[in-house]
Figure (cartoon, helix red, strand yellow):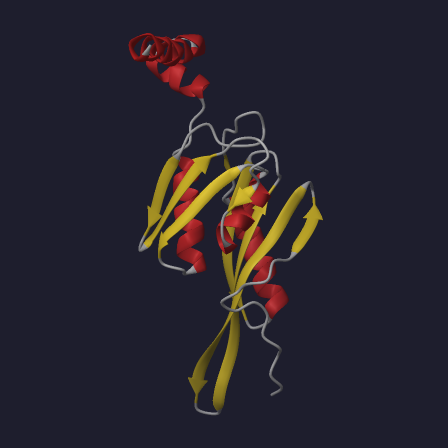
Length: 192
């Protein structure tokens, strides 16, 4: 049995395809071997992130005997698990947030215009698929791509817009922003 060339691995190559306004990025491919009586049987595990670059993103993992089939399965799972993330001005998040999954911990911070995506490997793929153009993110703990992606999604699920917070509190969005501006004005008066 001929060995297939290994794609991805720890570094993980990204692959993009556009279909139905969705962009899918291949985060990593892992080759796994099962030892049987006649030798080894190889299979491939793929991790894919799918997004519409307008605030919806999902991830999926797939396993198969062939690389293209593993990628197809992962892409289908990613499309089924898409979430919507509220974005500020269509370019960044509304607030800083933290997420963790297993040993993977991530800190995600909103950034000023022109900052770009400052994030490593798997997290960058998530933000590019999401359509965020300005964000600063740091991964603490594991380097496992699966746990990093899941921790990033945990952080993104905690994001909320001022409108949703105001609705939950029974107030107007201007009231929430007004309190912060009022506090800043009082701090300026106190500091002189």
